[in-house]
Amino acid sequence: MIYGGGGHCKVVLDIFFEEGKYNVNAIYDDNPKAENVFGVNLLSTPNIDFFKNKNCIIAIGDNTIRKKIVQQLQTNFVMTIHPNAVISKFAKIGHGTQVMAAAVINPDTTIGHHCIINTGAIVEHDCILEDYVHVSPNATLGGSVQVGERTQIGMGASVLPNLKIGKNVMIGAGSVVVENIPDNAVVVGIPGKIIKYQEND
Image (cartoon, rainbow, N blue to C red; front, side, top):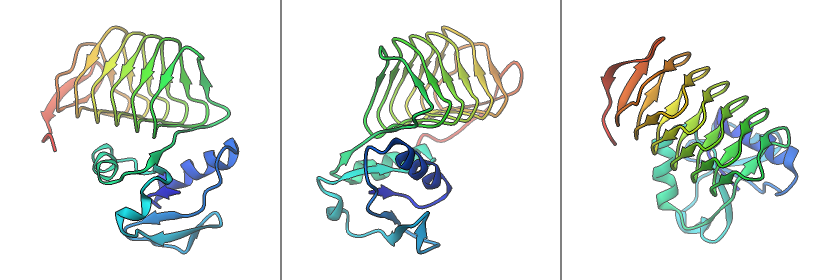
């Protein structure tokens, strides 16, 4: 089953259809705005005990919200990987993680739990991504980049090799990161500059 019935759910559900590894029985959302998504029933979220020991994935793009929901549930979190993604057999990927079409994850990279490697994103060799990281469409991490928990790398952004990005960081779309970034920073531009700090929820 899928938790979250918004736009991100459509992509996750499509991957499940393409992958053919699991049958999706239902989608649950706190505020469902339709009766189904691509023919799969979209239902109001039941009591959290309902999810206990069931196969589930959290299809919510916001890293902080995704983490809060994960912490509430006692379930068997599964991953889904689009058949057109390119994943090295020497990469490690945590449970609950979603890898979209045309994404590339290269050797000796470790992806944490409940991450999103979005459409066309590239994660080069020897990277380490902590839990709840979102690498947005067409973003690129050079080799040996470290990314902290709940950080989002914006659409089309690039991070040069051997850099460390802290926790709860937002890298703006199209930015080019050329230096280490501390926790909670918001970075934009070419080269990327810190414009402010966000609260650490």
